[in-house]
Image (cartoon, rainbow, N blue to C red; front, top):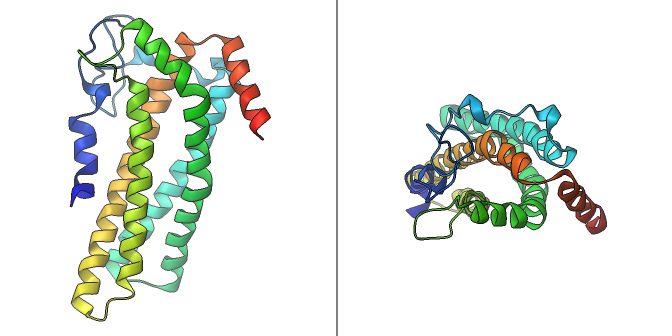
Length: 223
């Protein structure tokens, strides 16, 4: 199934891993061609305290997301080891409620406030794939969409598990749901890591404080 390949494809076609047409952020570094996924260079490091509160808010929300992902992953492993229990079922339900309420809101805020201007700045600087206009912002938006699709697949599989009369079929579908859950965890962890260590530090460099103030005002107005 296509969604089984999501994490692998994310790595292999990741625009952040591709060669930039032009542009760099010092020492030849480009957000379109960073090193290993979980090893950003120290030259990209920016003290969060130096960032605008608008960016810091997103990073603070990521902390709670990572805790929820850890709890969700633990529940998945427990189900694989011991089978479903009422407590584990509640943990899984809690995660999907959190995902629907918190992740969706967080992602939407990024997409309507930060991403439009940041994407334009990347294009202006030449930080995009050769022969195309795919920027790191497009990659982050793609992550959002993939995460929602994976979550829907997992929920559908879990629902089907309890409706199937055949025990062997139940186990097969449940295993598929749990494996998709692992893919979702890895996708979101990598997404958060890239935002915190690559995208947000670059936004800090490319967007001015008054522009961040305007983004904050957009959020306040929408509330």
